[in-house]
Length: 150
Image (cartoon, rainbow, N blue to C red; front, side):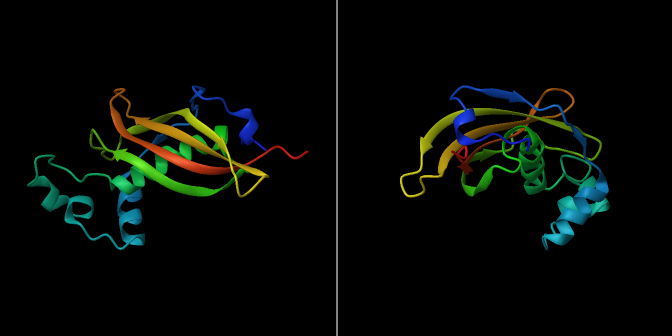
C-alpha cells in the first residue's frame, strides 16, 4: 500500500510528487462531455479563437482532479476513507492542451477523529504547476484517513 496512515503524517510535511501528466485536447473534450459541461470555451475551437486565450481552456474541474490525482500515490492510496471537503480552491493561471502538470502537497493540519477512533482527519494543501512552474491550481482538501491498525 503506497498511501500513508494518519500517524505517518506530520504538519509541515511536503511531498513533491514524481508523476507528471501532459494534458490533451481529448482529455478536455471527454471530461467536459462526461460531466455535461457544454461551455464553448472548453469544447469549441472556433469559438475559443475569439476569446482572449485564442484556444480552448482545459476544464478547471479536470485540472483540480488531476492535481489531487497526482498526489494520491504518495499520500492516500489505500488509506483514505473519503474526502470531507475542499477549501480555498483557486486557478491562478489557465491550463491548455499540451501543458504538463505536476503537483506538490503539504500537510497543514492533523486531528484525531472524535467519533471514529480508527480514523483521523488530515488537511492537505495541494498545488499544481505547469511546465513553466506557474501555479495553475491550489486548494486545501480535508480527508478522513485510516489510522494504523493495532
